[in-house]
Image 1 (cartoon, rainbow, N blue to C red):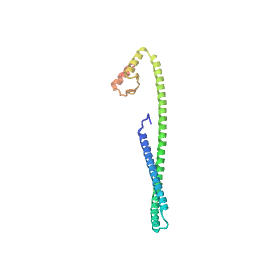
Image 2: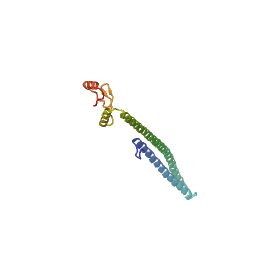
Image 3: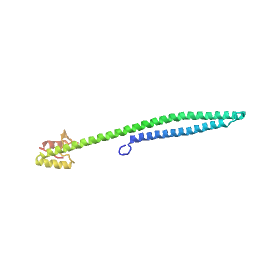
Image 4: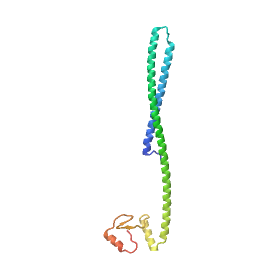
Length: 193
């Protein structure tokens, strides 16, 4: 998280983690419901076994049918519990992997930010050193050249000198015509744009 706001890549991971957490919570809820259902069926088995008179054949036969049905429901609950447990384990694993990825991503962002701050500080120090060197060199220029440099530097936002590479100045990169190039070559000293 950069400044508390999620970046585009983080949003996707964040959404995936929330999705996995939602699936985990659903599986936990389903397992809790199944546990209640199982407890209810077991209670009904106990109740049915206690309430039957073993001397009455018809009631014993009904008890066997009821217990058989309850056993089927308990088997279905057990099957569903295994399925929910597998879903829970998968969702928990996905959620954990997502959280670990987010932690690694946030750590990488922090490291990148720290590296950027160090690089920016180094650049600022380099700029300050170059400005000191420029000031020292400009003080060594003859007055007329110093004045021309100062005017050009103000006019071109700090760029007072450029080098002619062939027919192209190094800063503006606009190729000079043959006539302009010949005029620059004939001029002794410094020329201006």
